[in-house]
Image (cartoon, rainbow, N blue to C red; front, side, top):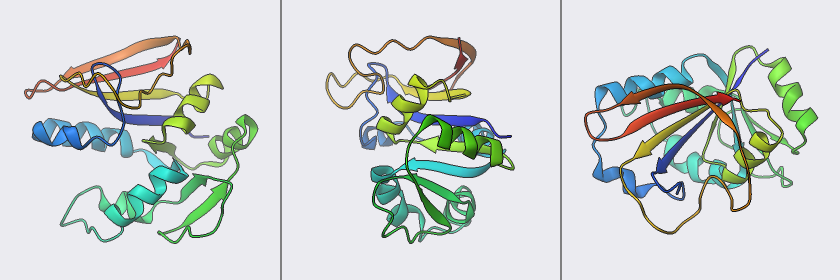
Length: 179
């Protein structure tokens, strides 16, 4: 049985939308190691359709020489929550309709952990259904004041802090588990 590990790049005011703002904060070796620590035990990837369509052209042409994460993203089975099963051409990919029981079955059948990134609507549903085992928030010292936020207005999510890792560029990794 696998666990679901969610990874998000986020501003201090909770914005996760199209994180081009991360470019102002250079990647460091410890940050790369932190991301590798999230994906390292994962055998599968779970994505929403929009994130899949964003990731496919960005990752499909990368090699291990370009980015050490490329083999994981390109070769791992990708489960895409969508009502449109057509056009899932990037690596091994399959369509999944969202239900708590379907996602629990994915967890039960996984040979390793399941990695989730982006996919805000999916992550909100996973949190509401208490299916997230680890929430990794790579938090940038920046407030945008507007944009898509991970936690929607009116939603209450209780979590338990598992660890914090500060990086020299001001970015902090916050890891939460279920409360």
